[in-house]
Image (cartoon, rainbow, N blue to C red; front, side):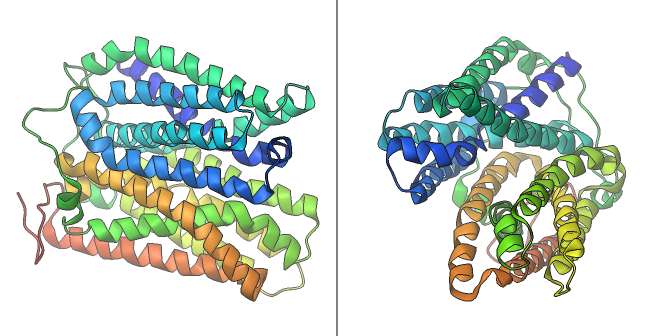
Length: 426
């Protein structure tokens, strides 16, 4: 049963990534068909991001009420309906309307699954699962490309992915008894584990998908007052802002500032994403031995090296291109490790609420940072790209290291209580 549930969760993570690249891949055709300016893509992505933020903040209450399995199944079903709605939309404003359930479904399932895996599975699974998100995100552009070249149209691509999501939803509904039968007993974290030890896997029992009655709802205001939460939110905002900016603007920087051929720039910009996906797969093999703290620290260090190579004002472009690949590899372990370390840093009782807020911070960063750099680039030039990334690297690393020192001073593995002056343990 344990292995079967794990396979179901892997498929659910693929479903998380499947819709993510559809808007970007199809928009050059979609905006012309719908008769709207190309810039209107930002309206759709902002509505989707708004929905994900709202759903992430509400995920703690929903998951405690209904369980992670039910929230996951309903959320994927909601995204399936939204994608089918996209395929039936003949106007831009219908797309905006369907973007609301799209965002709500994506945000709820992201927060629920991430917390479930952080609580019940080893660090290697968190990295591999997020690698599977990358698999889903990489597949959808190919679906869009096939739909456009085969005459199905962009609506055919959305319909195809919507049907895939509907099939996954059926599988998740069928698997609901497994979530209730497989009881994942979280490991006891020792001092060594926080710095570099392994976490255990699930064992079987009863009632895993039903929240323990002794743990009540953690309000948003209460979670935000827990010492260290603000630090990790800023770190997560910085990391996701960096990732989103690199994905959107790397190719433009290479062409506009370095004079790289368009095809070469596009290929290496895509290698940034492949570096994230492949890096997470590789990180899974040693994540348990290294530990979350070292994964985050090493990831930011590799990111800094990659950004430095991109910034070097040399005649050759080889180092800048290599820097993009190294930056992608550096990004790979940061997101999974931040999520996986949440129950250790802030306590199991608080983890769902804090992971929900972290998801909101992540979506806020990836939504705001890319257009912010767009404004800076328009005013000062594309050459500012690596320096903008460098600021986010430093901000993320400083905040995460401050959290590490805070946790080290207070001991590890217990429940942190909200406090406005100093820290207490419950």
